[in-house]
Image (cartoon, rainbow, N blue to C red; front, side, top):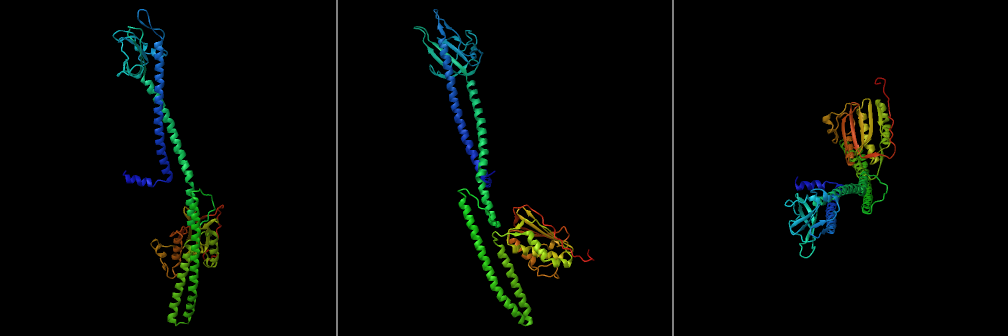
Length: 475
């Protein structure tokens, strides 16, 4: 992978992952350096301990060595430790005089002239110093030498005591394993603790994100305590929300004032059109009606844009609309079923919700034969509202075209072809969507995706409202 690709992947990492990885790398480096220092200190300590042991054995060997009247060297007693009796164990001692070996430990074998090997360092370290030796059998050893003058005219005695370097290496390896296990467990514990610490420390950012989402959705959150670093941001967001609400209210007021100012002259023009010649009256009324339609639509758009913290209950609005259209349903003998939980709320203006549901339910009334069903449920990002009927349905090729302004599948049907267009415009202003597909009842089904959710209360279903006024011939 290229360096740029690695950088792109790193930039996509979350803050928790970045901080955890950074802490793991830094902590790993600190633990590694600390471990090396501890191993080095332990090595020095062990070497001093072994050297002190060698020195004690050497002093013991000198103390128990005697020279009889004939000048022969005698070792009266034993050097402490059974290891000096194990053949080729690396633990050994020798006494040399005049270039000849006059006594040695059992571990070096029997005293056989011409066969015995001297414990000699590659380089003479000097009297009383510890150095590396090569013991008989090719055993890497560590030894100390001491020269002792016995009597005048007699060659001095050279005492050598050695130990295998493998003992020193084994002690170091055991300590290294202990350090590796302990530091690995410590490092893993630090990584896990750091991960949960970062998650806890960054949790207020999730709450801050929820606060931003509440501003977008028009919800008012209860005040909460914020960390000192985030409190200024939360205060600024509160100020921003209040500022947006003021701007929206001002814009709505200005739009309403403008509409009121324009509608009055339009009413006058409509009255004048009555007195105008017949050839001009009809075009004038049509243009006035069109202007009124545009004004109503743009007022709806101004209400929807920046809805603040308004709420509207889906179930209550749907019941009101069905009740208002009751005579129309009775005239056609339609059955209307509502399947809407009482606790579902629309995050927007109630007038917009009435316009959405009113247009769609009335449209279903025009085409339904026997049944209309209105249902609503929560979804991942809001609410899904469905209005279906058992009418002729909408051909798949025409499902997008009928959203165009003024388009109608049946020119004989009443209306101006603006209902679905207005529905789409309002829904899009709320960041939602609207689609048409086949209804399980057999006709068309319009699906709205709009912002909303549940009130904090136990959900309950609205009993189906049935208006049945069928004639005997259709029952």
